[in-house]
Length: 427
Image 1: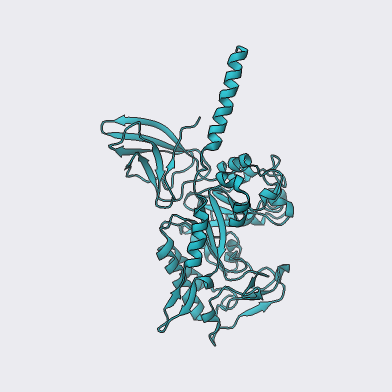
Image 2: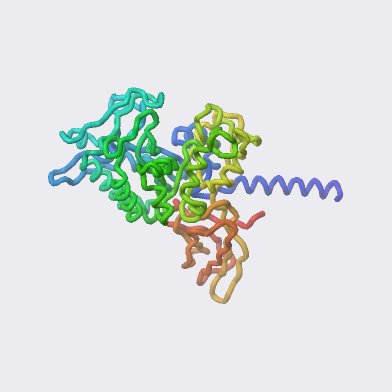
């Protein structure tokens, strides 16, 4: 190759790489920041599509009316969703009751159970001064039927209002500390400081019935409770119930069995079956067991002998909270974008053919997990009838768009997207 041609080729390569980097990140997947971090790191805004936050049931359920109905005020929740959407991002939300050491209403470790339930004579919370070294913790009183009834009614109302809301991407839920299905440092007492297995079956059935568009997820730690008869989660999943999973100590030193250090997390993942990911999303949070885990996991060397790309592929991860990564040396916008691409689905435009009065569009999934939301393909202002939901890695689907032309822009459309996403062919 002549020097001039080589130079031109190099320039073209750089321009192409810049164009790829300039494309918006694929939605409903990738690395995740909390809102405060997203605001303080605007340079990462174009490299992420999701933000994570807790929300408290007591902040939405404000009173109980005569007759037992609950009065809700969703303004705080709407403000949270609107703030995240203002940055072009969607929300991964988690509702919880117990949070060790967290101050609420001036009380450290107070539960997020609504005040009108706490005032009942048949409701009595229990307390642990410092379980697991995480600080003072109060526990909901699951012997109180009013708490069970409220929990079911709350999630039913949440689904009625927000299941179809495009600002809400994924819902995480559960019981115990941080809704993570454990009470480390405190013995679980089903029907007292933890819901009974029978109530959990009712809860899971309610969630499956109520949420049709928003994937909902529980902690992998529920598998360990399943073995002791405390939780039915893993059993329900193996029988076909399609809820997702999250792992809040992902890539910790003892995560995998191969490391010879216990493999606690991997054993819990396995309990849900080898094909769980084909129907239900996998997510979570990079470990905080070591302060350096979040800051260093994006290193080319990985952490604890495991690289991020390999860990994401092994567990079919669609999204992962990495809020402390910007405090490390590896969280450049380019690396964040690359790591996000290594999550979940990766939809690529294939062959586009004009067939009479319609357009035949091939879409392939080159990622590591399916697309878990309802959606289809549009060309210009017209839409195909087929669904993209459930497209597996390596699978190609053909969508027929009546009345469309090859000059029309081809996009992914979904009731769970803030706006249509343009599909591109691989450079």
